[in-house]
Length: 402
Ligand SMILES: O=C(O)CCC(=O)C(=O)O
Image 1 (cartoon, helix red, strand yellow):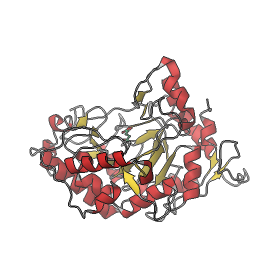
Image 2 (image 1 turned 90 degrees about the vertical axis):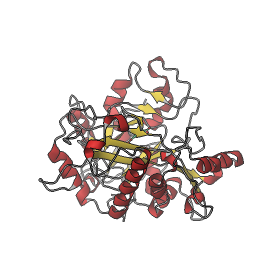
Image 3 (image 1 turned 120 degrees about the vertical axis):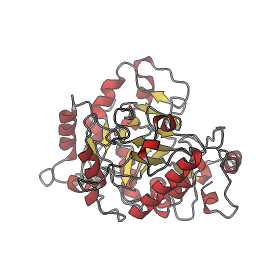
Image 4 (image 1 turned 30 degrees about the vertical axis):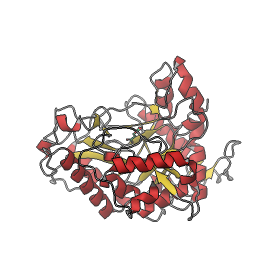
């Protein structure tokens, strides 16, 4: 098994990567510091490390972070795996090393505002008792029926074919980011998952306080089981609101893709399907030693990880206070609190050439009928479609990703 620190042995300009979201340079990839991997036999993209005296090494900082986080019950924020869109060699190096990568500003600020509006359009149509401007209507009986109440994952009401998800998938920088992940040329086509969304309400909001809206943390898992050894694909999360260590974010164990077989088997686990919970003896220790929150993230940042990476999401910290929320969202001290703390779109793409003719037809059928998929674009699901669902017109751009 790789030691926790071995997976983090990289020299980066941390100031750029760990910058609060308000200071993150958008859209240019310029916050991606040069990647200087320490030489190691399993790093195809390894380069010579920089002289040790020139810069602090992230391995030291990360070990210090993990030490200081120990006992806090919360994974330390870490965002050193930033890559610019189009930088395929850095992306390959980060994915090889950590199994995860962050693209900043895949959606612009106005696009995030539009995406949030599309989410509310979907929610108000599916649940007419909800009014986006009246947080008292964002009630437990509605939100708990959207999918998994413990994690905030939404998978009902044809969300996977909603305008919200499709707008996010068809953003030009989204497609370019996924091209970067796969190292595709401009003429190679991608296809997308029909996955859902994640939504967390704000436990500090007066309408939600005391109503048990805080979602779980440490639900460590894999979405790729032992029957699929080796590389299969990637998963992704587009965050619509800025995220900090306090508000909650995606949690990953960097480098854990290298331990996939052990993670599937540790403690006598015998998982049958792709979903593997890390709750067996020894799992908690493994995750505690390695897990970080990918934070801070700005609105519109995309996180992508290898499906063999152990991951989960974090709900709000137990000590989250209104000022933490306002600070994360760039709101003045007297501003009303937002009802939602987190809104994310799950998006996984892969080269179209990986789908068989039969899988492509199943995917077209899913779009016609309004059914979705999980993280794997090749496995459509026979979920009940929304009665409000209407298939897109034959010239709709979304068909290009089907
Ligand atoms: O919401 C997240 O950041 C992660 C969600 C997740 O773990 C999953 O959908 O498998």
